[in-house]
Amino acid sequence: MIRFLLVGNSRQSWLGVLNDAIKPLGELDVCREADTFAQIEKANYGVVVIDAGEVDHPEDLVLRLRSQRPLLRIIVVTSAPAWQLARRVLLSGATDCINKYADKKRLSAFLSDTVDRANSVSL
Image 1 (tube, one colour):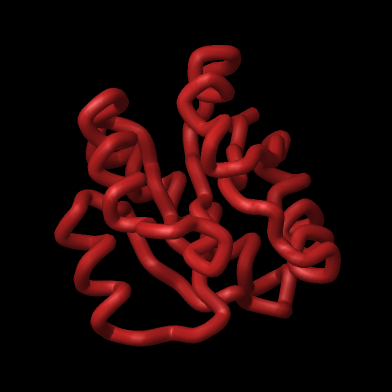
Image 2: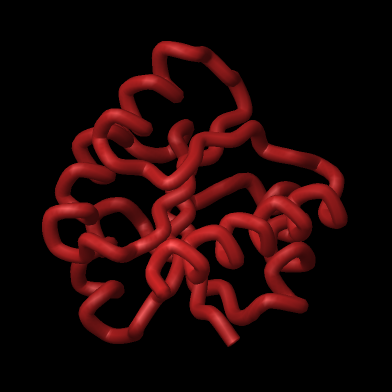
């Protein structure tokens, strides 16, 4: 089972979709941006999901996370997709940048694929 950490207080409806999508894969914890690094020290997270709408500068957070945890899978989610944001976070070291899927099956498939790709690269 993989531990997921959501950074940002996402709206309840999408948080429910994310939680349902993660259930087959592992557990989900949620924290505010200010508590991210304290939370990471408490548990061994395999994936950090950053809600770009809830974080001031997602690319800076990605850089800080990447510098402390080089193998961490970091997914940035956004409800307002823009190629500029995707480019910035990917260049900062994010594993991926995606839209906030409302379909839990599609989101679960994406998360599973991300975990599988990361596992095959680290072997």
